[in-house]
Length: 161
Image (cartoon, rainbow, N blue to C red; front, side):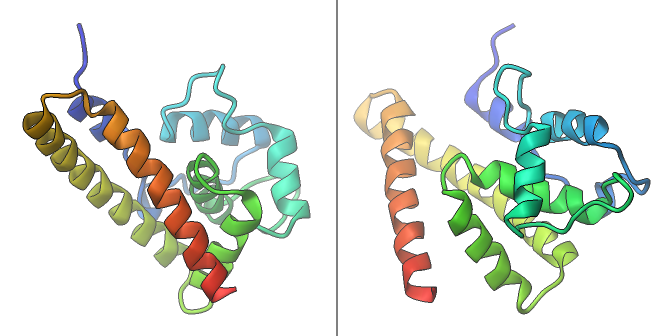
C-alpha cells in the first residue's frame, strides 16, 4: 500500500518527556530507541555509538552514568539527531545552550515536540496549497523552503552568538 505525504510526516512524531522510558538504557538500546523515534532505517545511521560519545566530548549533552543513559540523555539525542539533518553540530549546541538558560531539558523537549508537530501541519498545508496553485510536485517547494529555513536559522544564531 502506498503512503501519502500526510501519513509519512504524521508518523514521525517526536515524543514528549512523559513518553520517554523511565528506566536507564545501555548504548545499543538508546540507538534502537532513537531509530524508532526518528523513523530511521538502519542504513541512515542517524546515530552511532561514536556519535553519542562525540556529543558528550563536545559538551552538547551530559555524560552517561555508569554507561547508562537516562531520559535526559534521550531528550538531548532526539533534539540533536533531528536537528543535525539541517544544522551543524556547533550551532545545535548554541541553540540548546541558549534555550536551557531559561528552561529545563524536559521543557525543551516538550516545546520541541510540539513545535515539530506544528511544523508538520504547516508544511502539509503549504505543500497542498503549492501543489494546487502551480500544478507542480511540492518536492521542489519543500526542498527550497528547507534551504531558506536553514539559512535563516544560521543567520539568527549569528545574531545571538
